[in-house]
Image 1: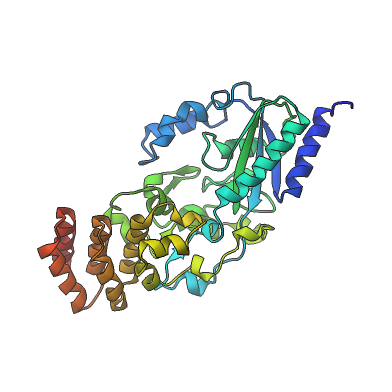
Image 2: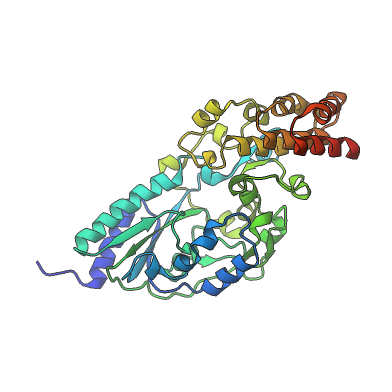
Length: 380
């Protein structure tokens, strides 16, 4: 049987990707990404916060040959996760905790990784003896750079990949392979133009300039990646976000006009995964947390950090009705949760909230919790 030409092989890969339910696919050369030096500077400036794994893997991230020796091609894939816009009344309801849309359904790592595995197997059949590795989000690859090179879209001012006719609500995954496939044809991409809505919409000012994100200020980082005490000056800016933040995407004209409903049933979720009542979240035991959000990305921060986020959201409710939920969190076995509950009680009107704070200031065994309660009482 005559071997396929590289063009025919590329078309076969694209066809297989479409059959697997992927919405975008393209090819980039396995060479250093265009923003390699920017990435080095960004890390050197400390903008990655506590995500030290980025520093440990920097040399691999800027050189695909150190990920897969002999790699010739990076196949980039994109899949929409858009299901619907959260009704404004739910998003604005301070008694509910908002969860980022990408976590409404099943964990995208598992769903998309299974598709990339099948695509990698197809590549092996097309190119016997060639090696491939594949990743979804967790690999040492600057995937937005390569997605841009592969023609999937352009990197917007909110630092996310924006696909024309689809927007930014899509997952990215990649296959590095020693098989040589022709790079996707260079096409003239649109841009954000003069629009700066995302910079204006960011509650904490994490988008410090176009295309530059300071993760240390980002609500997604603070509620998911960061495991410590959230700085006081940022807590009141976090609103009712308990897992991630979509503010810089919700305001984007590309999403407003072109967001494409996903073909993947696994990414759909019910209201309990979108904007559940904070009182329900505050009352969860750890087993219930793992059951309720089992199989979803919401498990990533862990139980204590998730309740920490819930405590902050309850404080931002600014309503006496939050007191009962905060009283439960104030008795948590985690000092991290109790500390944020103390701050939240300081934001909450009513005599019961103050009485709980006084009790924490007098009796909590953790000095940091005691200090937070004392600070809240003094401030009130």
